[in-house]
Length: 120
Image 1 (tube, helix red, strand yellow):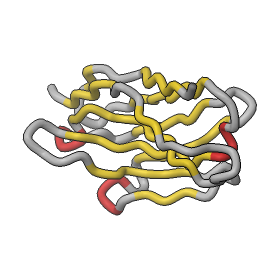
Image 2 (cartoon, one colour; image 1 turned 135 degrees about the vertical axis):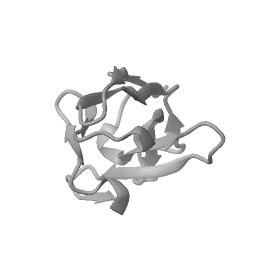
Image 3 (cartoon, one colour; image 1 turned 180 degrees about the vertical axis):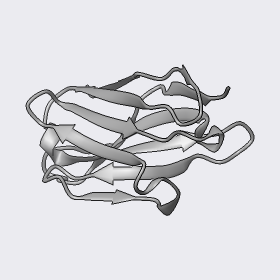
Image 4 (tube, rainbow, N blue to C red; image 1 turned 135 degrees about the horizontal axis):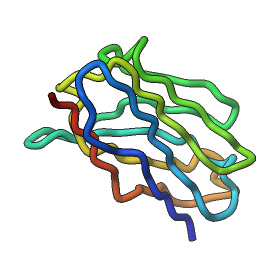
């Protein structure tokens, strides 16, 4: 059974930084592309960034140059480094593991989320 546990969310002032972690437990971590999504109050959940098992990344324009996703396959952990945070980055951030190698996995998984609040 796969589990994803996010951590690192906090209250931070505008311009500040945070690093979120997504710890994966289970087998076949390399079979998944992992992504960070966020959901602000009253808004739909949106994809922020993804990283494949080989380290290929994709990121939305609104955070490009400020957020960086990385992956440590030895630790089964994905990180989201967030710099120059803005109030509009306030949201619950969710980790998602999307099954890519169907011979090794069958389902996609979500973590429970971690709250990021950017406010002075």
